[in-house]
Length: 289
Image (cartoon, helix red, strand yellow):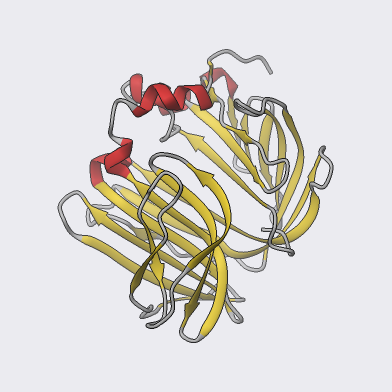
């Protein structure tokens, strides 16, 4: 998010693009053949890019993750993201430039999201500085960011019916919240506070509190002190099954603003959604380096 709070970016690298209809239609048997670097910019002139690419476009080393024309490179101190993508309809244009993520500290935390470990969350750097330099007017800015990863051996909709996630910068670092309802009816209720050195501590967060639904009527909730109600301050991504936005809430007396996500996996399971997603997620199987 930018320092002014009016712009934001999200970059996700996929091997096995979990939200790709092409990956679902393929039977999800070959993750490397459905890879992607999804780039979304939020604010005036924002764009969304998510191209499902084939195995030929994937190149990995211990320090670099490349999918076609875009790549992420870890220098040991910074994550350098070079972007060269085409945005989805209705605003088709090139999204090109560089984003640099500089962690305040790295963590050693891994959190199983299911009892049998089929899904793992790995918050590498809950607090980071970010520098955005894209080839578009007004898209050169600095702000604060976050760097994590998720790993799974089963489809999300197999193990979960709904989840919400939030990362809120605090005066001492950042608090990350992961709440979910699993298919078996059990819940995940986790809040972790990170300090500036990357040290982590599970904390007793305030209760789950619902707030206004998204434009697609996805239910949303996050943690909030009793008597306060979270509110959206910047809309980012709004889909029939998914909402991403900047949300303001209050945690243990501190008013915080961070990125919040809500994912309705009951809706995502619907086969009617896949053709809709294909419009926003084109498939490009071939590639030459």
